Image (cartoon, rainbow, N blue to C red):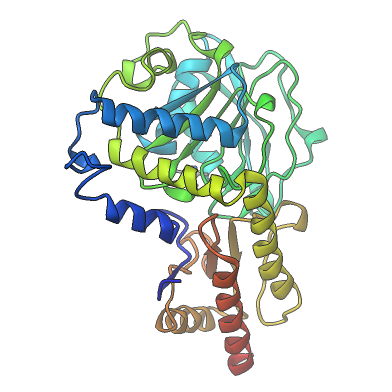
Length: 360
Ligand SMILES: *Cc1c(COP(=O)(O)O)cnc(C)c1O
């Protein structure tokens, strides 16, 4: 284990093994004599890196041929407009569910492209829960339904998949991508920026059902066009080569861990450890409803604000970094992505217990 434990929400911790491998290969990738950063993206060497990353990711997700994997750029935020550009035909509408700040942003951006309906929101209850599906005001004519699978800021996660019937379901999975098993066939599109749970910033992963590609009658700039990315194997221009390479190393690492189901079990254990302790403490508080607590991002507070500040200061001295909550929420937030070990969570818990003893 490294000296510092990094609980950042993103860019976030990467597995030691992956960083070490990248370090070893930094100056000379597999005898090529050059760094991945220096390679032509059209050369056979990078072609291999690209193909392996795509194949490993498809394996991890158990994707059928009905789905296309696209390696795009611009972050998850760019998908807030890329999704409506590709999926929402002129004059049609889309349904949005807001369970946190990211969903709100996605909705705002989509409004540039047509009619957008807010069909369910938990803003009134401070985004502490997910509105029950029965209350969603869904439009059967909508082009798609957009949800945020895991709200990184508030720590609210879907542990169920909305059944939207014929209407394609779209999910922003940025902060829980590859952290849990999903049935891809339930989704029309899901996307994630790499820097939360996959690799370095720069790569944006989009998984899209083939039948939805080319659906839009709009003029779409080629860099935002799913069809262009699908046809060119995400290589119509220079891709974020290094980010794809490191993400590919993470996919291999995930496979060595036993794949998604194995990592999910580990993630459940880590989250349970933290929530169990928080639930049994009078000193710390969490706010999100139990049935939609995030396994990845766990916000909490102590009894008062000054104590939170003290917590963060002392945590840092103890090599527990990036625990500050998002400015809109305050307090603390522990992001415990795939690459955070169970031992890492236990170190955090020991510190929290100790801090409670001294300040509770
Ligand atoms: C971080 C995050 C985003 C924004 O990602 P960028 O890559 O910075 O654009 C969007 N949605 C969710 C759920 C996130 O966690």
